[in-house]
Image 1: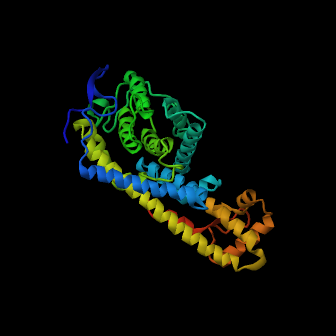
Image 2: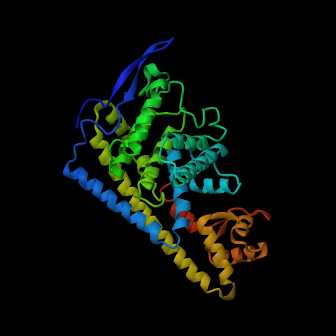
Image 3: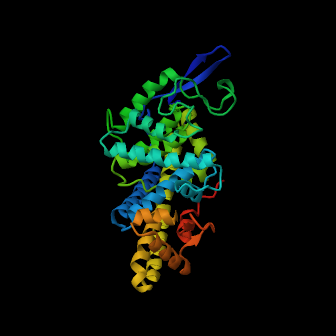
Length: 387
């Protein structure tokens, strides 16, 4: 559907050249979304898929362990959209102070994406609503690394930014001028909190993501914060108990289409095409979460049965196996800290797991050897190869 551009262009005059910057109209869209039967079915299917994910977090005995890994999977995928090359294994190595297989800065950036989501969830559960303050707190955490410290972490931008091109005059898209950003964010904040009227949660997440990316309130990190906002919104509105969703997999796979549809909203008001794509992304991502969770659960249960056959040492080996589900790449020292077992018991347990083929070594150092629950990492990493 083509409708009037859902915003306005303003002329910005600088010492070098004038240019046009885009200021989006407040949400919800006007005229309203045109809900075709196909689009309604797509949203219904996405909500059913999200319900299955939420049931996992409520009923799986190892849901907390899966959450740890799925949050990191989303961070890797979202960061890859922005150009980092870190894999899940690189991130896990970085988190135990080991050298990843990519530049250290790439792994640091992904680690801060995980920390930003943790910050947002902690603030939500502490009673803070989704608001500019919460997003700025997340942004401060996200950019707390060497590449980000000169880009105003935690602060709404005070200067013009642009996307594509070498300057605003030849850019592919120019977000609002800095002086328009606070009002645009305030309007988005009201929308996120159902003012002046409520919006269904999944629709709200879809609309708010486009609006945030269009406002582009920060000097850097807008894409990652905007994608984290999707999952945070679904948690805040009670659709998901835990952020066990990685929509960035679909966005990364269809990256060109993703950006085309964001532009389609800005240029033509084509919210319907974006909503269909967004619902497809959520449904596909939710289905992948369920598939991966079931595969990991089957793997873990099969391995537990093999460990149980070890006899009297099985209890300590099972404790190490449980710890490896949360941190599937680890050192013996890290496993000792998590389990409370002695270093000697950890080393004996790892030797048993190696004999069973469950664990493998990533290096051959005499001290500080790194172990990997390989099949677990491989299952998590199937879709994560950088593109």
